[in-house]
Image (cartoon, rainbow over all chains, first blue to last red; front, side):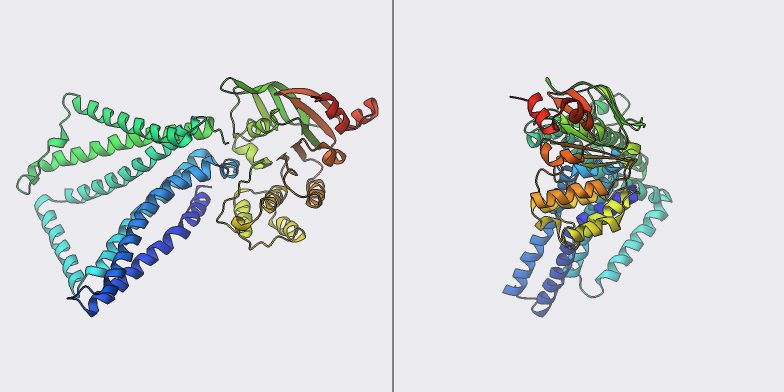
Length: 266
Length: 232
């Protein structure tokens, strides 16, 4: 059932995002063409297409946020919830399907932004140069620090993913908590968001106070001390992953309990 | 006859407001049952409780002996009072959604009914009138071969001509082992198809009876009896 939910979630959001991505890439291409004609002077068409490109890019990022909130609220907690919650599907699957699809669009939006800026800025031969440089950099890093670079890369990717997930889940939990209020649900959701983020911040500070934990905020890493700091850095990333993971599970649990036990559709 | 729906001291409170108050009820399979009561009497709340859209404050509600959950949702076809259709799908897409999630959904039935009500399967849900949306929803709900149909105000928003068609649809689209529960206050319109009635007022069951008994023993129609019971 999860795969079917993912399919419909992807369809519901893709119809907005795919045209946006396409428009972004097309205007990146047009900007490129115009600036290729007269690279020295900023002529009007180039400026206009550049402005449109930047607007689409901004719109795309705003849209990922709006869609994240809207898909959760509208599909599960407004009238559409009557259909979604009477499907023979466990509530946690609804949450997971929305979370995964939201994460996917955020990552694709970032990639689309990167690719489109490359389209505009890249000169001939640049790409192979960049790839070459990157390969050399990676090669040197492995030579100096061994295979732990792979581990580090892997940890960084995981920590980015889990940060995105926790950012989405705190919003879901806030909306769900706001839904418990009989009136002013929007306002209550907003309040819940502030409370949840404050609590998480306090928790993080408290953990930092525990004797024996290093205050990672004071880490100073320079190319010179990278080797000695490496294990510390890795420890910092791992504990960050664990902490964010625990927070995310708490947000998820709050959302799931409310959707399964405290649902009260209008 | 076996029981399809039973309530044991079923209570639901919203804050201090009691919507359903210690209801005990046993409904048998194979009938069309009218859940009748004035506005705000708790009809919709009971239906929501049966669909796990609400959780009881105390007591329990069982469908085919099971608490509401995944297994009951597979056998219950529910028509809420709200329009739950999203605004981006076309009719044939929502039919695909129903086929995907409900094993007992019969798409060919749905297409047949759409045709007789002159609704184009390629139309967007967004552009439809409220009445047409209600028709589409009813078609979706009745195209399932469920064991229990819970229809909350199924004829409230549609025109009288369509009303007749819808009642015929309900009559012809359930097999003899299935049960239909219709909540409404438009009694005269549906009186003829009912086998059994439950009167409910202020969250409590006031009367349960077969329609034949009402006619034979009291010599009244359900509509007249309703007006007497709920006289303001």
